[in-house]
Image 1 (tube, rainbow, N blue to C red):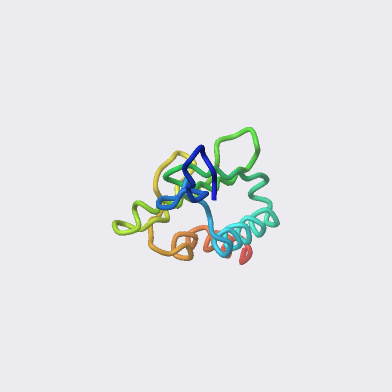
Image 2 (image 1 turned 90 degrees about the vertical axis):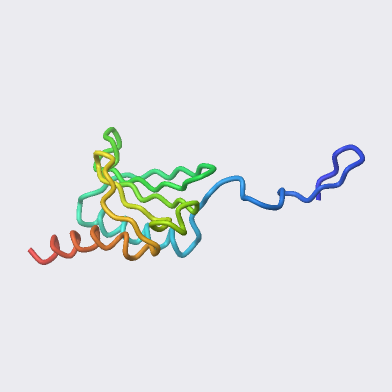
Length: 117
């Protein structure tokens, strides 16, 4: 509870959250993939951005470049094409879906091909 003058209001405000974020199991899945890509020598850095309408995880080959891959979570798109999307280096949408595993599948397939060679 927060006291403001003569009014008492719940803290944090009820209703819509102030920003979109990743749940624990989602970030564990994303960071697990990130770790395997680092071990394979393809990614070296990452960044996360939590905004009002979207949470973004971006992976970089080098810190000075644009992200090689972006994973976005947009809850507002949950009932349309799915709240998860995978974006390529040029910003193109590579995959959309309702579950994180399906959206990460193209990257995981790429990782499997690299190990198999």
